[in-house]
Length: 312
Image (cartoon, rainbow, N blue to C red; front, side, top):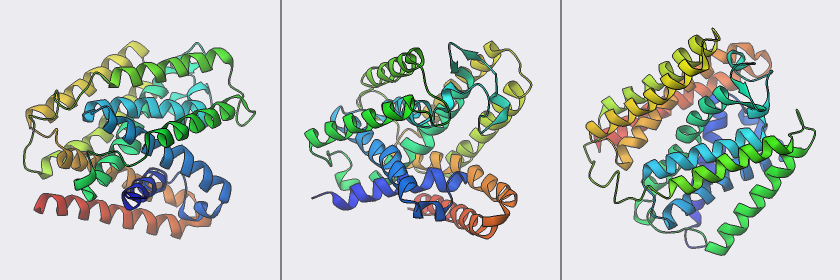
């Protein structure tokens, strides 16, 4: 295949970076064939399909961002099924908070924002930066891309209705599938000629710090304080929407809406995640050394990548 290196790079970044840097899956976990298959399909192939859809529809980065939210529904809603859990969420602050019609709305919004940047935007931006000459061209045959998309949807639907964790209901599936479909349709409204074509500034450290600040917004303000103290969900979503609007405004005003600056922004989002992974590693005595080494190397690598892009 002509673009095999670019495809492999995108798939590997999508499979490894989000899971390893968050500590969700240690490197040794990839030795499990079942886990590896799920990560390959649920992360690697899914992000590849999103990338192909974005390129074929000439979407800008805002469009890809919306597709990232749609992906979060596939990942956390249909496969992992955390969006339909009322209790037992990976962030206990969201247990029982803003749970409406069988959907944990606040958790869905928070994890959706994280996935949009870290699981979708970052891998695509990284792959496009490494293979810039091929970034605006499809990498996969259209029929093959459609087949992969249908396969992923079929498998994720099967996961949703099986007994793993909890069996999803038809009404929950309709809500999640409708939201995912609506986000995909909405993303098509954001063509490249609109948002990012006129915003180009030299890469700078400021955009990295802006990305780092998202940790305070998402995990401290929204999660630990608003959701943790079970304050009004109306306040949560008001702050949530205002925060996204403010970040977009800063990115536009600073002319950081191009590929390299947005990559730096997503690197900044990942740095606190990796540092948090180091702290959390102390709770895993069995694989303590593996997690510590992995997260330290990841943090150093992220800083190195940022410095490399800025110097160029």
